[in-house]
Image 1 (tube, protein in one colour):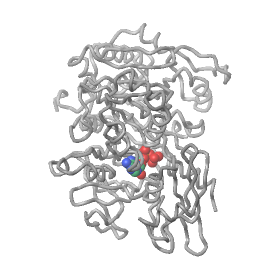
Image 2 (tube, protein in one colour):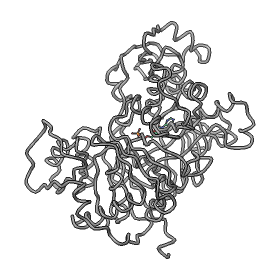
Image 3 (cartoon, rainbow, N blue to C red):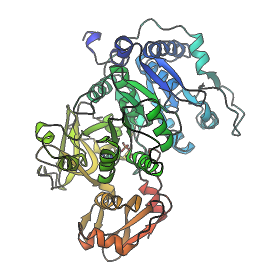
Image 4 (cartoon, protein in one colour):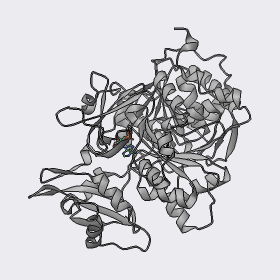
Length: 541
Ligand code: ADP
């Protein structure tokens, strides 16, 4: 195939520098906020590429990053894959054991490191003797961590590397099936799993983000990229902005709700992407500071990675005029699978807003190129009637065929190309998919299944509740019984009897939690999802 016809990142990610050369990205690292126009973004990537060649990077090598969302991270995001090497963003919130266990497989020789994480990277290099170079992103900080650097580990400065390197003249022509990145799951249900993304899968995913019925991303948008770039390649948003010429705002480390709101208002952000816990915290900050932030410019936000509550979607719409687009995805699928805007079809556009809201609560339709199916325990297809549930299978253009390295869960990839997602879902007669639970989180009581997610959504809608998790407690008689772990809104109170009485309006008595445990805060995973592994350890019986 002629190289110009191949789905390569280089054909897509630099388009902004031609169509929108005056626009670019805003980056807000601790050493100072800066604006970089798209042509300069492209030039920086080319200079970093020649620096990488000087450091001995060959096509197929893996280059890691340990960094937050900022412009220096973008340099690596573009240069490494376009050069033919594999970008490997490491989850900065992992502990050293977790990082080392993944690097044991990926064996990256070079790690680009945010300046604030240098001590951690030096300690990591002590555990991983194959690491030869650390590239510090940002001015050196004085920390109180390890100050001695082992022999054979060199440290260079990212900005100096760029300044001293000429731009490469051309990006190489690669095979579109070449691996361009590797990302790992956050480990919500077990050991992190690493997935390889190719140029082809990433280009197709990035193209899909620009579709009107996906999230209506356009070159007129300003996108605040909250989702960390190490979480499933930042859901490909950095690449989509480079493709369309949308302005990209990169917040770096501080993702507190006040900071997010300040950035949204100061930079006239029109859209953003994050997990529901972030959006709930943003709502709480808006409540606590009436009139401080005006979200008039914000048109829509994407909530993905976990289930949002109906209250969250409704309150953004009614109180702030912001549409919440609900998205489902997973690291194994590059990662976006569905998007659920308020109305996609003519039929939905004619519905009244409350019926539209009902549809927004479900994960929505698969993006073009993907197919969703549900099957029962005997492997039989479950009807698409909106109520029958089954295990969710996904296949299509950007679904991985295997984990990058052996993993006990590897058998979820079937030989016919379908991936068993581990989710339990229903699909209605218009193709709208609703996640009912993660299979591992379903509670089996007296032989009947109880959806922890359905209870969490219902309890999460109580005005007294800030965050809620429902987990199983072992029970001699029933096998398992649900218990609710809840953190309350400021100055609110809630007792078990009230919780059970309210839930009884929508659930059978046997489905309602037997216990209510009030906690100050619910533990979250490194990507901001509820950490049920930790909760089960905290409340074993
Ligand atoms: P981890 O498995 O470590 O959490 P991922 O981020 O890849 O890593 O998680 C993908 C999983 O997250 C999905 O299989 C699903 O269980 C959950 N998920 C993603 N989006 C949603 C959503 N909109 N509603 C409910 N669950 C979701």
